[in-house]
View 1 (tube, helix red, strand yellow):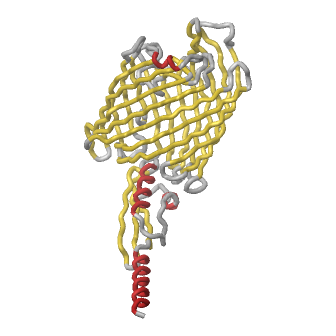
View 2 (spheres, helix red, strand yellow):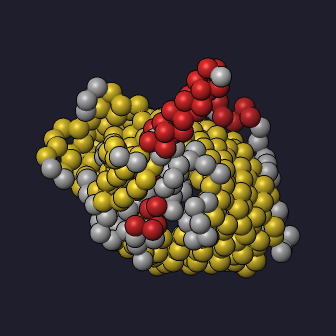
View 3 (cartoon, one colour):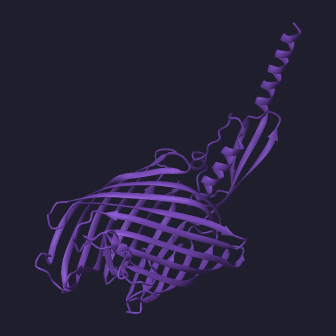
Length: 418
């Protein structure tokens, strides 16, 4: 009888303790534009669940990654019947212009301007467009709704009409083509958990090449128009943590595409690359950041190889599409240091080294070690940051080449280079 009474009392105490550890109320504070329902939808905790500090920490990490949120924190208050959890957020201003401008010592000048709303309808939907002038005018429109169908499932729609002057590298010299790419893309977005997500979909596009000047070859047409179908898969592992301008952690993004051509002049091909990112906070004011890109494509001996050497893609100061290849190894590493910080404004200095090498179309892996194929560009720059506006980082970098036939030049842009 005594043992039975002890068991009943123990069970009663357990039930009372469990009840007191329940979450009885959840509140969001600090949000003005972002819908409370849109933030609650993304959290793990629910009213009636047992209080779990690990789940709360994960929620805060997720909220700080949203374009609409500059910073997030939490408070827990004990009540008579359980706990009240309050998530506090500091919102970003999310209607953001974008700009990329670059020059080289060859007097080359090009720019890209855009305007994006990263919190459309208060639902963390990105809607916007861009205009580019790179000898010719171009434009694009983008819609991205990662949480359209709940916490995990979303949709992206993209349209672009891009026209540039592209160098085509032939055995007997370089030809310049006017190149137009008109594309329509739809992607499904799925997030397995906080660290892992995928994107998959299809892109229908048209490529139009018109010869302008330079070298010619009998087997390379001077004018052709090709329709293509591109199947895309992106897998991302993201374990980054953000504290305003400082980032720490590791991220990996794998991108694979299969392109089918309707004309024999441009063959079908597969292209895949992986970007590895590593960020580490150094002391109180420093941030070391690195990106390693490894990529391979079908090794056709074609002047229209998919991997480009370009200012805005991989090597700052190198110029606009100065070479192409069917394989790529690129390492960008830089140290960012906060020189001045007060309230919303941050000024950072930046020193970097960009280096990379490419496999020639139809070549072999030995091409990566060929001095004609690799480029190294050290440089320095500045970052002007507004802490309460999403991605409001104006950057200016100057890259100076130290390898064979090197150039140098400025690269301007909105947002960190990587």
